Length: 397
Image (tube, rainbow, N blue to C red; front, side):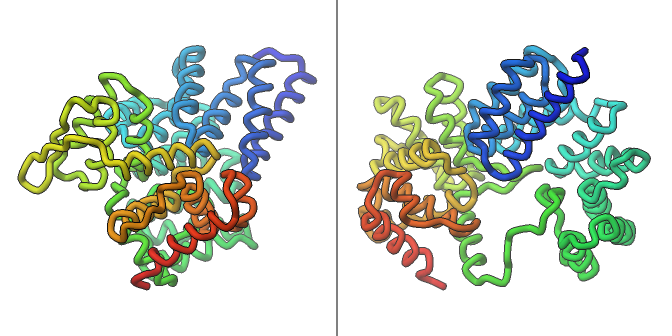
C-alpha cells in the first residue's frame, strides 16, 4: 500500500483503536471501527482479519468465515487469514479441511517476523508443537526477543517437546521481561513440579482459568464429558458445529448430520442432537442412530431438544458465546427437564437468560436485572430458573 505518510499513520492509529476495543471486550464497537477502516481502505487486510476474529469471539461463525473468504478471494495466500481459518475450522470440528490447511501452512516459509510469529502462535494453538517451536525460535534475532508473550510461547513449546530445563530458562527470561507478571511464576512452579500438561490454550499469555481447588469444578468437568469432544489441536465444540448445521438446510449439511448419527465412538447426546436436527428438516424420513452395537430408528424430533436448540439460537442472538460454561448449563438444563420433569424450557427466553447469567458469573460479574432486561423477562421469572438450575447443578456437591 503506497499511502502518504500522514494517511498511513492515521490508518495505523485507527486500527490500533479497534484492537484496543477488542482487548477491552467491546466487540460491537470494534466491529464498527473495523468496518469503517475496510470501507475507506479496502486493501488493508489486517482489518479484515481482526473483524473475522470479533465475529468468532461473538460465536458468529458464519460471518467470521464470510469475512475470511472475502480476504482470500481478494488476496489469495494471505497468511493471517489462512492461519485464522485453520483455527476456526478445528474449533468447529471440521477436522478434514482443517488438517489439509495445516499441511499447507507447514510448507510456508515467510521472511517477515510478523508472519513467523503468526505461524508460531497458530501451530501452538493447534498443538503442532514442533512447528510452533521452529517458528518461535526464528524470532530470537528479532525485536520479538523483548516480548514476554512470544518468549512465553517459546517456553511452552520447549516444555511440550520434553525440553524441561530449556523451558524453565526461557520462563526465567519472561520473568526478566515482565517482573511484575504472574504468568511466568505460575508456569515455572508447575513445570518444576511436573504438573504441567500442555494444551493449545497454554500458548496464551495468561494463567489458565481451570481452578482445581474448587470441588464443583471437578463435578462440572465430569458432567460436561457427554457434550464435549476433546480437541485434536484446538478444543472443538461439536454441539456448536451441529447448531450451525441446523441453519444450513442443504444436502451437504444433511449428510454431515447423518454421519454424526452413525459414528459408534460419538457420544449418544451429540448423536441425538444430530438426529433431532435431521428430523426437524425432514420429518418424513426416519433417522438411523448407532447405539451400542445396534442401529436404532428415531422417527420424530424431540420437543425438548427442539426447544433446547431454540434456546441456543436465542443465546447467540443476544451475543452470548456458545462456550464451555454456556453449554455446560444448557446441557444441565436439559437433564433437569428429562430426569426431573421440570418444564424449565417452557419459557425459552427465561431459561436462556438463566444460562447466560450463570455462565457470566463463572467468568466475572453479572446482575439478574441486566440479564432480565437483555432477554425481556421479569427478574422474578429469571430468578426462579436460576435457582432451579443452581439447585440441580449442586445436587451432588
